[in-house]
Length: 499
Ligand SMILES: [Zn+2]
Image 1 (tube, rainbow, N blue to C red):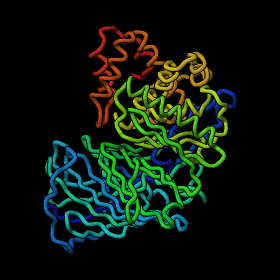
Image 2 (image 1 turned 90 degrees about the vertical axis):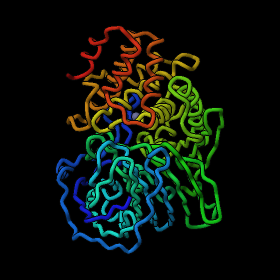
Image 3 (image 1 turned 90 degrees about the horizontal axis):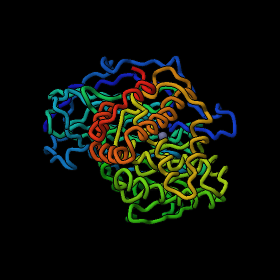
Image 4 (image 1 turned 120 degrees about the vertical axis):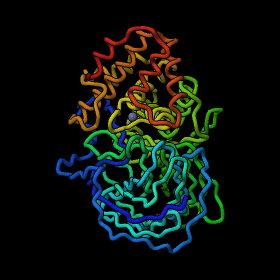
């Protein structure tokens, strides 16, 4: 459609705080339970309510380009992201030309678009060079927040598509402890490195970070990425959310129906790949970690097979498992990060954090990737399912280490708290994890025994199928559950969920 832009309003929303999705870890029971790395809390961070953006710009309406043709909605209306990106590894810079084709899939006319610019949490990391909306150049200044709101003169009607062309430069910051995004001398991790359109459900879903959990919510989108890395072609190994194809200028990637697209680039990576009927899985690890790198590869491939049978077929062709400096793991779509401490602790068996946390992260490909949820307000939907997926992994292997697993990951902590805790309920990390993850797993175990194996498994498959590509809510979870059982499980819900 031809949508002219009156003005761009930007507002300060978030300051500081944790990375895109700092996966909450669950420590081994062999040490103090407080030894998790936690993003520092920022109680003084200001938060401007999203309903009242603060215009900071003089309206600019300079049609330097003719309005583009109305783009044909493609990808069944999913947001379409195209990137042309050039990375200078040594200078820690990424020059990006991004195009977004956004189709209004809501039932309402939209009078603005809200973009999430997560790299802007770090000062001077994100430099916006130009923004063109449906052919009209507009000026915008992004302050030290992550919300970029574009007010549209002509509302975007349902099923209409708008194009955004964004040129920007990323000054990749040093990776901080507890975060994945950033550079180390031997690795650059690009997570939430681009502006993306926030999901819309009765309003834009954009949350502030908290001291615990994850705050970003993603709509299922299609990605087309050209990445050029400065230097000789074989100087670096690139781990990505999809397998790339090398061409004359760089590497081309495509990934459809995914929540996000991430990279990890390193000149010292080693890699091994295992192919199965479900997916090709590649483990990227550092020198001297070959045994652990192979072990997580084997566990990941096995987990993909188990979850493909139990939930839904793995939705992509490839999965990357990537070592980085972190005290835990982090799920992204098509790629998971795993902390070096797990590789260090690996003991040659299945009974350790490398495997248990590893398959937890893999299961997020279903409970986060395939079935989305609001990670800030209803984190139990993906985290209790991911933790319980560890149990499902272990019950599928021989010898049967499920009793060990319950002790190692859950009961040793003597958990308590409400499963339906949000990241804003003021819980410290340990209490938050106990409530959302551990009590969540206990809830699912009780539920499974109450409704029976057949109904439970049918429910899992139905839930995965029904909410593929969507953002599921707690109501959706229970609505699906009720299709598979007539048992009264209300006492279980009362025990675990705050009214
Ligand atoms: Zn998780």
